[in-house]
Image (cartoon, rainbow, N blue to C red; front, side, top):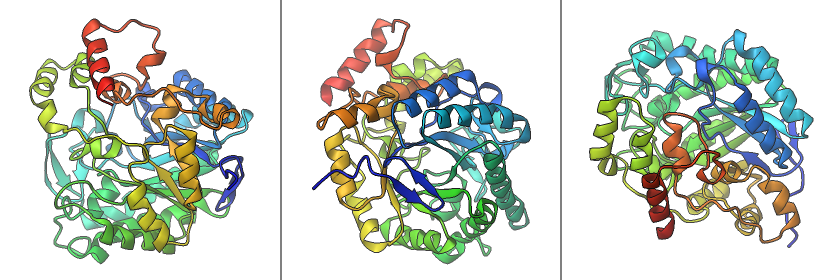
Length: 407
């Protein structure tokens, strides 16, 4: 069977030159909540490396949706900078997408400027902070913020948006029975828990019109006891298909409850705390990090078994993401009738990996899944240790070597 990898694929109004997409892996390259030259240079390098579309990661639709201080916040004053970025991507022949979302309870007043809000009132250990449940009368305006962000994305030159409805962010917090304890029409049954997603998608699809592709990232499973499982997630997927979404990106996990279910492997705690500046957080995470962030073994295409159940149940375009580092496995996934694949760490490790796959039938990137990039991301930028200019401290080198030797 001939490879589909380098054939065009159409998602709604958008046709990509091939079936590879740079996933919305958070770059942490936006000081002041606006695009930087570093962000532009990175996405330009991925576009030049042959990818069909590159996704700028997590842009908050309101200030209250910020979870990090080096994260994009969609507002009119950043549009010129985003336009420069999309122009650079287009000049290399790739399409440009931007992930839009709201972090819900995973923030802190010092970052989002208010008491964090979520589906329900409570306390979030992730920050740590108290959280206020959104009132029902606030939800239509929150949904309109997603629509406004889609319009801003169009103005900035993006070809597509990816709505984040997974990983324990705000839409996911409404969907999951673990985080939605509401007693009103937005809580209880799955039908009620989908209502916020429904009004968001209504605003998004109206704003997208007929010239922007809309992808939605969703969980197949939340990845912990008491969370969403496949039976309910399949119903969510069918609802998103009915809403008019052009493609679903099939993922899983909560970054606040099951982060390594999302990313797999071991979190390098020593590396993570090395870059932290808050002394009490540094020592707290060093003491309890292994317990708070348990290891989940990595294997190639780790979401494929679950994703195949969605492929069998849906007749809309599906994008596979999770554990793709080699052309052979990518070809296997595409042969299962997924329209496209997303990669994050592989393209951080080697921005030109797609071009190399075109030349090498058995191409494999050199990422060994130490997750240094993720541990570093929380404090500075996302970067692969194999591409750093600076010398790493010996203690971090040893931690990376230990984790990689287990892989």
